[in-house]
Length: 314
Image (cartoon, rainbow, N blue to C red; front, side, top):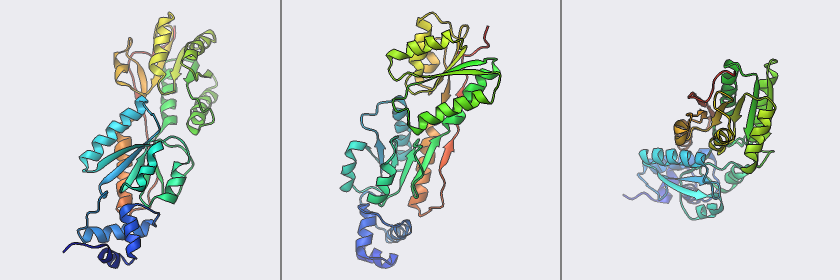
């Protein structure tokens, strides 16, 4: 016998309209009611369209290496778990008004989405590497950026570097991620009295070389490129202007790209665990779909991949 919305509503103890909202994801419903409806639908053998569809939300025109790497992991792992990924850029979120989904994973950095989502959608949302302020019912799985930066700085320190530079390339200098990186750097310098530090933000590619040269003139012997997309460029600029790595200056990049291991010399870098970010985010979403709501945000430690760009200063 084919399950009906009315039969599911009776089993779940709610109205048919509420069942329709849950199954379509068209309007907010309390987590408890949603879990009851989904359980009743499952018991009745009901397979609504979109029950295995998960939206992956991206920034508009996001072609960063990070976004590609984490997206690849999400697509592979969702497919392995028999879900149907639906990739949407932030400017196309209106399409979700007519496409049934069971949940969403967000790679959107900007603050605000999580607030809007909880008011306009009944399906759960998990944010990846979103450091905005907590919103009830929206969970986050983040890389521990501060731990990664501390690990890099400590490695410099253990190699006897005492004048350390950090280069970033953030356009939004009020962003939480930028402020946390800067704060972590200065805290490390302050807690190591025998250290001095120079921090610079090169918002334009053309200013990266100038920033690096200013650091060198300031006596910096080790540089951490702590912004996405600049690790390869910064190492290239250092070598093309006559700096020998690591003999003249030690260097650590942020993000282990495929090419990092093939640079000359192979780059030591901080690596975000894309596989763990993806699997933990999907695990968190699945727990919500199962009606579990006593969850917590998760922070995934970064790895320090040690190669050939760090050595004690001369």
